[in-house]
Image (tube, rainbow, N blue to C red):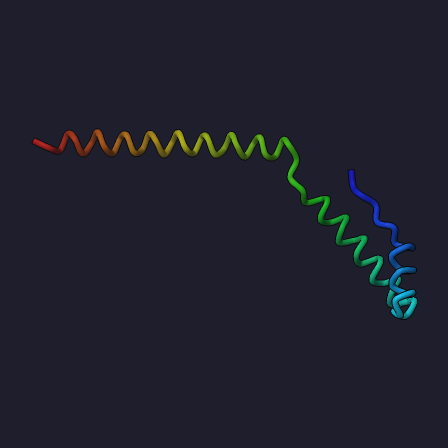
Length: 78
């Protein structure tokens, strides 16, 4: 699932704006490659679900540590 960039149209637009043809084609390819890489690095729903599970797990661990520390401190009080 990657949105295709119309490299020909991009190059034509750049050429019409006064960019030399070879340079316009190079820019269009670079934009297309950058877009493909950016889309490949997007988080999926599964990635976000796993991240949420990891965050909740960390929250429970931190809560347990805090409760354990409070219990230990209360036992130190005479």
